[in-house]
Length: 304
Ligand SMILES: Nc1nc2c(ncn2[C@@H]2O[C@H](COP(=O)(O)OP(=O)(O)OP(=O)(O)O)[C@@H](O)[C@H]2O)c(=O)[nH]1
Ligand SMILES: [Mg+2]
Ligand SMILES: [Zn+2]
Image (cartoon, rainbow, N blue to C red; front, side, top):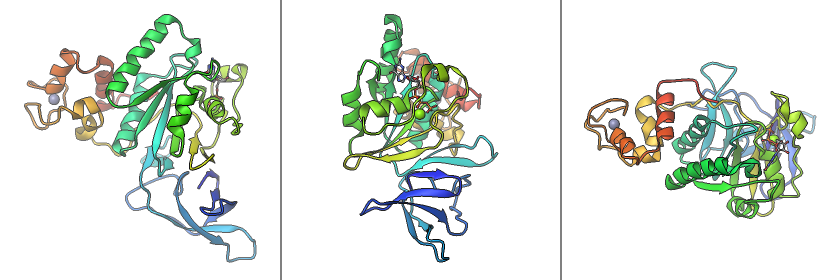
C-alpha cells in the first residue's frame, strides 16, 4: 500500500506494478494492536475487483507485517498510529536550526526503531547553514551516534553535500523518512532522486508555524527496488508499547552493560553499584543520552 487518503488506499500491484485505488472490505482488527489506521503505508495486501458493479477494488486481506514503526496517537487516547510497515530502515533527519530538532526527539525515534529492530540512519541536514562552532557540535553528536552503531550522514540539499552517500544508502531498500516539519525531508529526497519532484515549501511559507507541506505519508516507488516513504513532519513522538524495565535495552550503550548492575531490576537512576552510572561518570556514556533516558523513564513530555 502506497498511500491512504481517508477511506481510499492507493496500491501498487507487485508484478505488473500497475496502480489502483481500493477500499477495505469489512472491518480489520489486528490482534494485540489498538490502532487508528488498520492498513498502513508499506503493508502487503490482497485485493480484488469489487463485487458490486462499481468497478473499484477492495482490499480483502492484510498480510503479516515484518515490522512496523508506530507512535502514540495524538487524537485518540490509548490508541497508536502506524506510520509505516515492512521497513528495511529508517532515515531520521536532524537539524540544529530552522527548525531545531531536540535530541530527545531523535532519541525517541531511535528507541522506537530499536524496539522493532529496524536499522537507522541519521542525517544531520542543512549543514550549509551552520557556523564552525555549530558544525563542531554536530560532529560531536555524529561521533556519539556512530559509536552506537548508527550510520550518520552530514547533508545539505543546497550545497549538494552527502547526496551520493545518501543515494547509496537508500538504493534497493524500503526506507521511512522521518523528522520535524521543515527539516528538509522532501527537498532531500528530490536532490537524491531528481525524478521524484515532491512538493516542498518555500522558506517564506515555512516560516509560518504549523505549515505542513507534505500532508500524507506516501511510499514512492523508484528505480530498481528502491522505495522511500516521505512523511509529514511530526511534532512529537510518543513512545508506544515499551515498558520502563526494558527501556534501557533500547539504548545500545546501556544494553551492553546488561546484567552488570548490582541489582537485577536496576533502573539506573541512583541505585548503588549501577554499571550505567559508573559508565556515565567515566565518560563512556554521553550525558545527553543519559538525560534522554531519564526523561523518557520519568514520562516527561519533552517529546518534541
Ligand atoms: N539552507 C537549507 N535549506 C534547506 C535545505 N533543505 C531544505 N531546505 C529548506 O527547508 C524548507 C523545508 O523543506 P521541505 O523539504 O519542504 O521540508 P519537509 O521536512 O519535507 O517538511 P514537511 O513536509 O512539512 O514535513 C524549505 O524552505 C527548503 O528550501 C538545506 O539543505 N539547506
Ligand atoms: Mg515534506
Ligand atoms: Zn543500573
